[in-house]
Image (cartoon, rainbow, N blue to C red; front, side, top):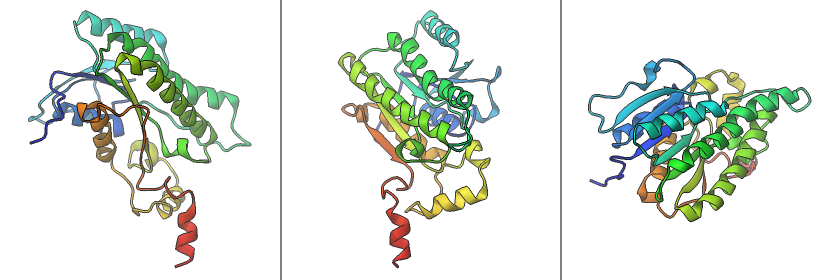
Amino acid sequence: MLSLQLEGRTVVVTGAGQGQGAAETRLLAEAGALVIATDLAAEMPADLALPPASAGALLYRQLDVSNASHWAGLADWIRSEGRQVDGLVNNAGITQRSRLLDVLVADLQRVYEVNVAGALLGIQALTPLMASGSAIVNVGSVAGLTAHYPVAYTASKWALRGLSQVAAMELGPRGIRVNTVHPGFIETPMTASAKPEFKHATLAETPLGRTGSVEEVAGVVLFLLSPLSSYVTGAEIPVDGGQSGHGGAKSVSDAMR
C-alpha cells in the first residue's frame, strides 16, 4: 500500500473546528500525522473526534489567527514541547456577502484580518520551527480565481494568492513548499448559510454538476503536505468541479445544446 509518509510529522491546522478544517484534521491524523488543531473555541469541538483506528494523534489549542500574540504563544508552546512543525494549513476563513456599492471599508478590513493577515501571521510565527521538507497549504477559494460578487471575501482570496506566491518564492531556498487550494461550492456550515439561489446558480456553472465534500478538499491538502508532492510549490489547485476552468463558457455551451 502506498504510504503518504506522514508518520511522525507535526501539522498545524487553523479553523479546524468544523467543515473543511475538521475534515483536514481527521484525514491527516488517519495518515499518521500528529495534528495540532486550532480554532476560536476554548474547548475542542466535537467534530474533531478521531476514529479509533487513527494512526496519528490530535492536540487542540485555542487560536485567533488574526492575533499575533496568539500565534507567538502557539509557537512558544510547540517549541517547549520539543517539536518542530512539518506542515501548516491556513484554513481559517470568514465571509462577508455585501456587494460592491454597499460594502464598507470595515467589512474589507475584518475579512482581510482573518483570511490574509491570519495566514501571514501563521507563516511568520511557524516558519522558524520548520526544516527543509516542510510544507504550507493556504486555503483560497474559487472566489480568488473569478469576479465573485461578495467583494470583501473575493478581494481577500485574491490577496491570499499573492501572499502564497511570495511565500513560495521566499521560502523555497529553505526547502519549504507553499501551495494553495481553491475550493468551489463545498458543503460546509459557511455555504449552508448561502441563499438557495446561490447554490442553484453555482451548480449550473459547475461541469461536474454537484457540490463538493470537505473530504475531497482534504484529500488535496493531504497530498500537498506529503512528500508525494515534493517538487510542487507555488501551485494553485482548484477543487471546484471545473467551475473556474471554463471562464464562463459553460452557460454559452449549455445554451447551444
